[in-house]
Length: 382
Image 1 (tube, rainbow, N blue to C red):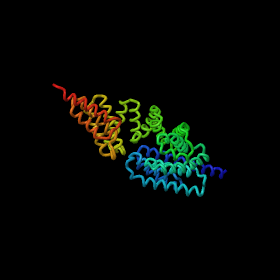
Image 2 (cartoon, rainbow, N blue to C red):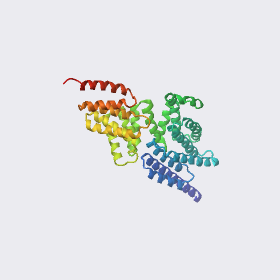
Image 3 (cartoon, rainbow, N blue to C red):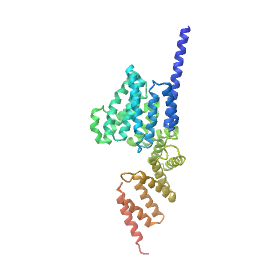
Image 4 (cartoon, rainbow, N blue to C red):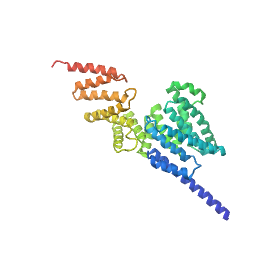
């Protein structure tokens, strides 16, 4: 009787500790996605100290740096520390797997670490290394899934692979030769796997929702479906500038300029209040641009001009090799605003500036036609 009671207490205590760990991980993950990096790091360092054998602490500390990279892709200063942390996760998982080759946690986090390493390599256009990471990670995740079929988090890796292995070769033909060494993708199956993780995942549900939002926007052109995920992620994580930008641009594609304007105006307000990531240049440029377009459509020309000029100012800082579409379009819109206000010579000058930039979406033809038309107005006999 005493032995049974003692065994029950041990099992109960073990369950409480496990629940406590899961709750800590969930809280830390939410801090990462809400761009509260100091809070997230504190939690995962505590996990690393309290559960040194569990790979989760190391893995999610690397995810903090992953989101620092995602928020400012032009800044590569976090790349090296991210790669170092990922290698530490892989090494730690390998040490566990030497003792227990069926350790599902070690398999899951090792596969995830290799997968995220590949994602950064793809972002940096290191496609061969990225593909090699995909080749290495897939069987690890498959084995973890075989050992624990109820683990919905592993479906994230399958979903990402199946979808992008089907779609990416058509989008980027130069990658096609690499794909002959990999299993064929299945786009619909990939979407279904990502949906399962988004709905039932323990650690990876938000990442799955993020992927679904982006693939519905970029590839499927199903903007209402993308909107559902963007709204959910933005509501859950209001301090995440990436989710808010996606929400705004989805409303733009849906033609709902009023709500898009409120989303991007709020983005600019958060930047002014020094919310982390909101004052990074790419997001600020995009936000000012779409606010300016809406104001122009509402014929609020002075306010619109202010935001187009802000867009141009930021573009001059970050356009490295050539002028962006944001910058070129801003000058075209400024020319149109000047004409609306009767400032014909200013309008002509804006169009001339467009001609001094690269041709983008027939911008040169548009500028030339309008310069000719406006010069004829200036030269009309009075």
